[in-house]
Length: 229
Image (cartoon, rainbow, N blue to C red; front, side):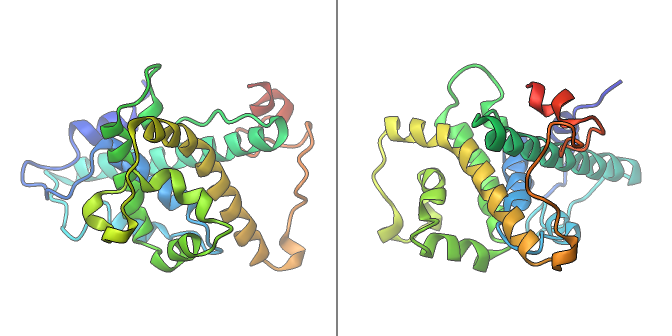
């Protein structure tokens, strides 16, 4: 039987004495996405992001089995997100199609602003793990546009008065629709910076052939996997 990691997280993440800083499933999805797409040469290490799953507080589990179940489900969700984001990035580059759907877009209906805001709240928490990296994106005129769709959903009490803009509902809807594309752009930027930091002998060709192994890690050829979507 396949277990949904989000169900595990939301149903029994910690004991009733759990810290109030524990994330909701939407926040967790945003947090892990922010960890994956952090645009820097060195990925955020697991011991860093796992250590901040419950903020500055310590999680209190009923027993080791519950702890292993929750952390295991979190790792599964992280790996699934990584696979899906990379597969969608490949489709964007090859077919110019954006088909990535964050958790706030899990249904067929237009997401509520509260749902997007909760997801972005988790994304913001991931940003605090690499503040210098994200600050440079906001300061560089070439990359400010990438962060634009997120800004309207940031918690207002986290922003300085001069950073708060008056965004109407239609603009927020448009921004929410742009977030999936910006996730892929951020992931591409992260991959470029990571590749640039490697020795030249370790760099792989950037062109992906239809008979090459699919980058999602399925073990199938690209033409029989993500290229078919």
